[in-house]
Length: 125
Image 1: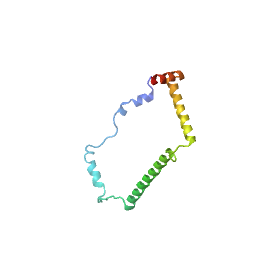
Image 2: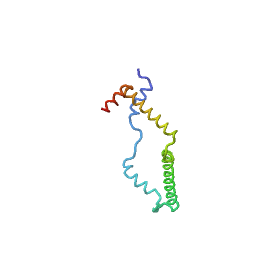
Image 3: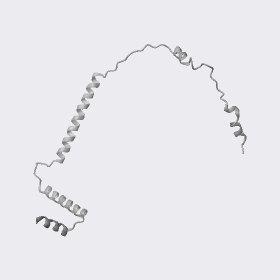
Image 4: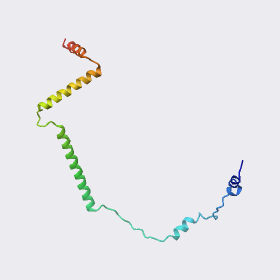
């Protein structure tokens, strides 16, 4: 069922374009627009960074390098052992850590003590 509004929308009058441009309008449009614009003189501008901008950039680069060096040294010294000799507390914690790794490997490979003893005794012969 077509109502009154649908007939109005589908009418022939709406299919035709109501807007018309005079013939040859766009042929002379660009030149006419350029003629109406005011004349401006062109000025060539060269941009150079100012001296204090260049100096500030160098100072920032130096500060970044210094910060990187300080952070790297802090990481290095925090990971290195102090004094070269391990304290008794450190050696016992390292042994406990090594034992935990052995336990983890044994659990992963599903080996029990008899398998480990058998493997070690077969290597001695």
